[in-house]
Image 1 (cartoon, rainbow, N blue to C red):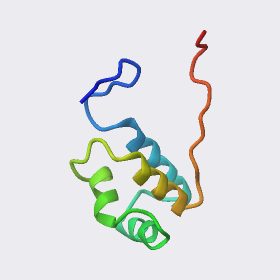
Image 2: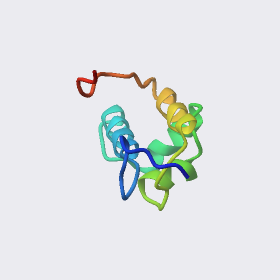
Image 3: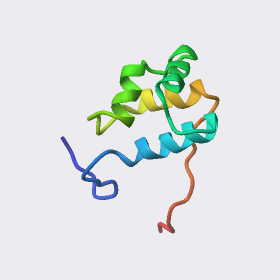
Length: 86
């Protein structure tokens, strides 16, 4: 597997924590299995997949799965400037 110098982490992918924050903001509480079921019912990944991100051993979810989860709660990701690249 190729490692990228611009995106390195030892534990879970930071996108998992970012998405957890989005889910908690959306539902107005800490993530629970009821919320994960709603995400699945609305077209997102299975409860098992999202539970693996938040409570399990999944370290690196697939981009399409994250996209589907976000879109199931009416969100989409966008690119924003992080630093001044030349």
